[in-house]
Image (cartoon, rainbow, N blue to C red; front, side, top):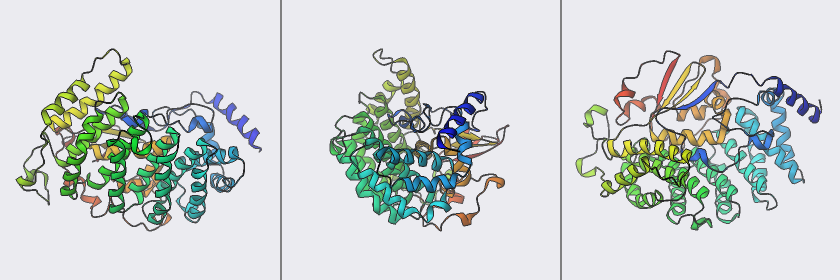
Length: 464
């Protein structure tokens, strides 16, 4: 069947399936509104690949026809799309990149990509370097993140091949959208594949963006770039110290970056304010600052800190007043939807900072519900959700990388044989941690989370 005929058939099938059932993955929040990263200006990839505009994770499925197409010979489509990246026509390369995004987000293709990773990575680097199309640059950066997600944690050599190019592009491109996508990709591939030393170096890079209001990357006061840099910083911070490892270094970093985060709470851009607040809540949660003061023996810590090692924040009263103002903001100059989103987000942030209360977000698919009950795990969830969109549930069910990070065990019928993945070395965010005992070593959980019983509609798994 020709490409044009397939497109016509897909459109006809869409019209007949308007009443189709929604995707079995349902994303919903407990107390947390969608985080700052959900409202960035990155274009939804579906608008470029199908002609429809769809929220990439919160909507019901309106693309069943396209997905049915993906099921048929999708592996051949991946190979063909990779080959098309060598086309001379920019439009042909853009079309191939858009197709790869659809395929790699909705299909787990580790076996297929493992032997082609060097070729594909080289072609993606070329597309990012080209200066004729910002769209090609952005799509190539998106595919790069999906490549790392698919291949997992044993790709440090690949990370070395992309870090300098991504940093150069972030600093020098004139496109805000390309900057934002490259920031997201760089932080995610670092989280997946880099060493601790490399993660610390990149953390400094993102902190410079925050501290200079974007000037360090030639994006002064650009809200989109600042939001993505804040989210990137939070992702790496969660990977380095979200499991309470190396708390001395985490305390030092906290004291260094808190002033710049507090400053960003005054930003004129809502997404920047929320992203900064979420990072503050993440750091308070990780270091046990604020109301989270409990006897050490109750939480079964092996690395109990002495009183002199405890962290405090000297300007806590001013911070709480500022957070409270943002949580109750009724400024009529802001839109109603913006005020509602901000107030909801900062109520959770304020509870963590002032009372030490936890936060919760949940994923549902099939008969399982996953509860994410820490700012660290929610930051990591948001990063993968941004990259995978509606294909997130596929990778939860089949990709060992996500299963390891989020301690998720899929139903036996959905499990992928372990031999399908290359042997992976541990990246900085998993080295030294015991996944099987991670939850039992967590800091304080709210009574609600500790006493939660099984959901009547299915079993649940708590993460964080």
